[in-house]
Image 1 (tube, rainbow, N blue to C red):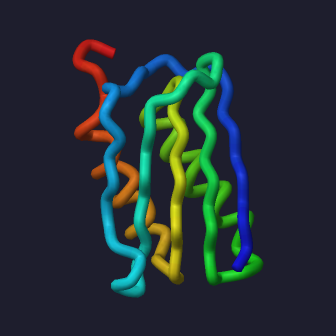
Image 2: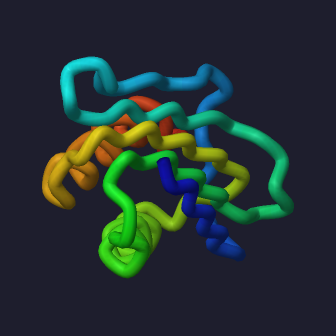
Length: 104
């Protein structure tokens, strides 16, 4: 297993209070847990993946995600069992869509 951590500062969209879990890691895919926490406006993403050596691809995928959503005070935990970048983006978007505050 490889653990990757990314942090994006100065987000502008806040999340609703309830955590959201999307996907199932036992299906050979991945799961995403997103939570509203005080990170001084930042978004922290931790990825645990069985596919070692893909840090640059993960960085591009989560960077693109954060550019789209601009999350603030969000902690995202990803458990991956070899999902493709397109599936990762889909799961991240599914988790966030239910949680962003209206008008944010």
